[in-house]
Image (cartoon, rainbow, N blue to C red; front, top):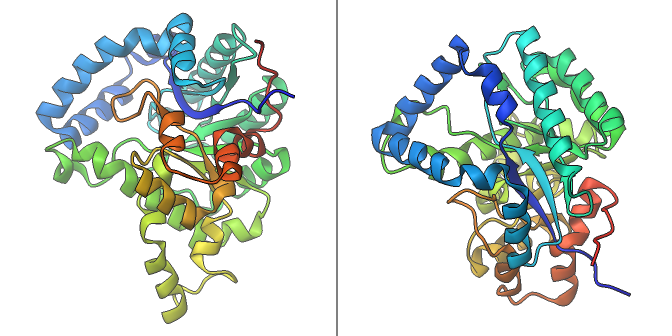
Length: 338
């Protein structure tokens, strides 16, 4: 019997058709101005140079498969490159998501034994997002969708308007991958790449905290929620949330404490060091951590499997993280051709 496949759940794809679709949109220009203010001039310039350099890695199938082979990765879950489009009106949002999801599926169909598709939805239009989710799962054969850490300005992931979306996600068994883009702290992060190093994990911690404290994970116990970058800061300090839950009536909003509800979600292993990975596993449980590289960005790693093996874990935990948990999150995996 061949060993279970190694699965990288965190990898990205650029869809040129989407870039062409939104290139002249005023909303995109405003978003870029917001991002530039939060990034600061030095990081903005470096990001532009980096995108030009890694562009082929985001679109070329052969380069992707070669990178996977070098890393010992059998299967990759392919998510669209994070592209906030909460500014898009309903008609444009529908076109953006259709182009994104069609592009991801077409790319993955070129190597169906190696790649599984993750789509997009337009959470700023909740009823549209629900329809898009159904289409992605039932018609396009996608395994889930990637969302940001909020649905739009002043609309958090626990907002009542998203109730149908979450209920539908549970019903479909769809994986919902939470991936941040920067942070709402704005220009306070405009130096030293704090936009990413502080902003991304802060946004994820906030999004997960709202899902936890709102009771959403208790109302939908079969939801498959996953978050990037090891769940941001929340797993590192969820004991503080637990303390508030025990000490204050305004924070005791659920039957179970926050740490127990957090352990109903999945995270990736992208926390860089063996010590941090062991801590993440101790908080989340061995059954909730998946392998993740953040391909092909510089804040990712080229050796996610090697880093897992370097953590000196028991064989059962290694097997679960290298692929078993991904199958629980994404559903049955393709048979890898050898």
